[in-house]
Length: 244
Ligand code: GLP
Image 1 (cartoon, rainbow, N blue to C red):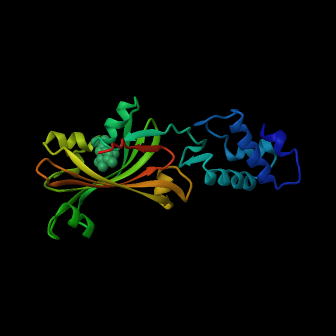
Image 2 (cartoon, rainbow, N blue to C red):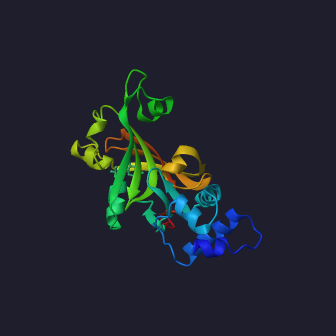
């Protein structure tokens, strides 16, 4: 399919013709969400264009979000996104939220360790400069789709061993009686770029949600200070409003 149309001419630069052919192939279902694109070499051979032309067309489509590139494994048609609807009135964990939708939550660890606290962490968690902070940072995935990046900070008293968090942070906290019972969540809009955009497999500049959660124990003590970035094309946050 690439050969016929790319060589079909029309005067437009070759990479634009090839780009259109790939877009058409996705639109017409010749290749579907999650499918691998043939290698750059194969496309160049079949379409009778140079590899530079293929690369240019593919890069454009990665930028526009139609294709995604995974290091070491190639280029794929971006998976179709089901939007996740999340209630804003219940304190749930990512693992719970995904399980409720019949999806499997997993994480890629970005960091877990003990560090001197930043000024923000000192203020929110009520730590002195001499105390330490436990950080767990993860790329959160649902059914193989990257959904969010979450960077959680907790006092070392609450999480002495960040290595003990295997999958669910809240499940680990529950084991020591430290699961939060209340949280304040602030949602703001961001345009994501750079390493975080690549982790979430979204084009540079994509609209995302920055979510800050400060959660509390029954005693009123802050237990968790988490800053997350959620994909704007994957989440709807829904709150029920009452007249009272
Ligand atoms: C949500 C919250 C985070 C919280 C996380 C815990 O996604 N935004 O603030 O840390 O859930 O999820 P889990 O228990 O699956 O690690």
